[in-house]
Every structure is written in structure tokens, then in C-alpha cells.
Length: 493
Image (cartoon, rainbow, N blue to C red):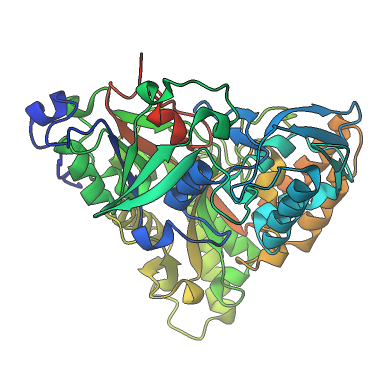
């Protein structure tokens, strides 16, 4: 059994909101990650970089603490009845270099962001944008080839910021301070708000500490940070989840992918039946039991169950079938394949390699998964390089709650592992459907085909956690596990 190593060292430090912190009015926030990735100018962002990008650069719309889409550079918008045109009115403002924020310049910046995402899953999601038009004054129109109900959520992603020369387009300015980064809110007019000469009385700076999980948790335990953001299952074992953490550990209920993507296109896992055997042999509840997470729901579906508009056409696999029977069938399939194709000794376990992170939580997951797979004659080993792995752990939160997001993660153009071109074709066919019910049925068919291909072995929803003191009231758990920083700079009243 895994022995937790508590980092909440004393009740006193947990009780004091500012134990050991600097008394300059700023709020200290730790983001779990690596500092060198935070200030990237590219469009492939990890979680800390997404948070910093969203604070310093704005898109047409943004996500609020509850995960809802709110105005940003666009002050309002309308959607036509057919769902194929989104018309945005920009706020009356200037770009960082002082030039007017015109429709033409916003269009050019948006097109640059879209083009930069080519070859990514978000780029595939945005394929329905057929044209971006600059209209009169400060109005731009996005014309779509087919309706896209979740376009606003896509446009709210940090990668969709409209960047311009001269500085950031977001509501905050970033500066360096010793071993941390400082985010400061811009004056109200520069944030699209009414002028207020006393605005500085209502805001505070955010001092960011980009740290590995253990160091970030230690900052919180000592009172040097009032919030820790960006925790994953891999880091959860570092957190004491007993009474001392009551009220501070916050979990996001997310949609997304948490499971194994098959990369091997030869050998044992090249066989669909064997891959299915692997999927049926995993006891998902037992896999997560060592983490003691209440409310986590396992699934055998590649698309998270319970999404809005789910027609209920896809059911869980192997319901009510004893795990012993499933493992016996899986072992028989593996033995049959090896007797026919494997030149090695069938009496010895076959080796399968997996790529996953080095954190203690991933170590715990690996040990339990390896134990389970030994029951069907497989020896699980960690790969030294993800490119050489048979299986890759996927732990990814959905950008928007629709089947299309999940299915696009396995698009053949992304070359992430085994894929099904027929599934890609069905998704494209579904998007062309004007009838929402028919679209849902076609996407369900695509999910069914992806399921039968067994190129992805689901466990359940990804887990995300934060540590937040009671003095931080702008934090809210949300399904995207994204927690905007500008709201944390507002002083609670």
C-alpha cells in the first residue's frame, strides 16, 4: 500500500492565510509546471503557459471562473438562426502599440492564430470556420461551413488570443521579480471597463511561482502561497487528503480522456481482439482505489458519458460480467495469438511497454496496472522513450463537452497512435448534418467504430485538483479545470 508523505507540516501554517508570506498586498499563486515553458510564444501550451497566456493576451471571448464564455476583446456577439454565422462587435479600444482595434486588424490576428494551429487537434476542431470577414467599423463575422454549437468555447481557448506588436492584449501585464513572475492588472479603460480613479484600491498583484508539484505544495503548506493550481493524478499522492486538507483541496469534475492510447502497429497489440482483451481485463475501480477519490466514475467509452445531448445510443461495455471471466477470455486471446505468431516461449509473459510520467501518482498507477495485466499473461514495462512505447497514458481535459472533441483526439492526421480513417470520415459526415438528432446519431456511430477498433482503452475522466485557502473567493471548480488569474487579482469585499 502506498504510504502518503504529508507536506502539510503544521496545523498552524494551514490556519494562517499569510504564514511566511511577504506583506506587500500581493497574492501568491503556485502553478504546477516548469518555468521554461511558461513564456513560450508558440501555440502548444501546457497548463501554466495557458493560464499566463490567457491573463496577458486576450481573444474575442474568454472563460470566467465557472467555465462560462464571457466577453473579452469582443464586447458582444450574435449568432444567426442557422448557426452558421457568428458576428462580433469589438470593444472601442486600441492595440498595445496605440493603433485602433479595427475589424481588419482583428480579422488578421484571428486568421494568424487559426493558421498557427494547423496540425493540432484544436486546429481540426476549428475546421468549420470557412471565412473571417471584416465588416463595417469594429464588426467581424465568422462564417461556418456547418453549425458549431461550441465555437465560443473554442474561441475562448488561450491559443486563440489575438496578439499584436507592442505588448499583450490581455487584462494583465507580466514582469519578472527575483524567482517569480508578477502579474498586474491594467487600468480599467485598457480592460474595456468604465474609468475609475480609485481602481487601485480594489486590486492586487499576483505573484506567480512556477514549481514542480512537491515544491508548489510546500509553498502552500508554509503559507507562502494562497493557491496551488494545475494538480493532476500524478501529483495527488503528495497531498495529505486527511482532515488537515479539509476545505483546501478542490477537485474539478471534468470531461476528457484518461486511459491508454495504443501506438504499436505490429506485434501483439496489432491484433484488434488482443487489444480488446486488454481493455476488458482492467478493473477500473480497483485501478483507482489506492488514490481514495470519492465520486470518480470509471468508463469503458472513449467519449465521456453524460455529455449534453448524449442520445444514449452507446452503453458501457461488459456490464455485469465478472472480471474473472473477462480476464480468462483476454488470456485465451493472448495465448492464441502467441501460439500462432510469436516465436518466443508462450509459457513466459509477453512484454508490453508503456509511457507515462515519473510522478509518484503515475508510479502507483503503473504498479496497479502491471499487477492486473499479469493476470492475463502480460508483463508491463516502462518505455524509456514515448516513441518506442506500445501504450501511452493519455490524461487530457476536454476543451468543450461534445463527442467531436473526443473523436478528434484520435484523428489520423495527428499521428498519435493507431487510428481509424473511417471514424474521421464519420465525424466529417456528422458535421455536415443540419439535423441535430441525425448529427448525434452519426457521431454515436463514429464512437462505436472507434470503440470496436480498440485503439484507445479508457479508464474514466481525468482528475484535476487545486489547493485554495478560504481567503481566495474568486476560485470555482469547473469542467475545464481552467482557473483564470485576473479574477484572483480582485480584492474580496
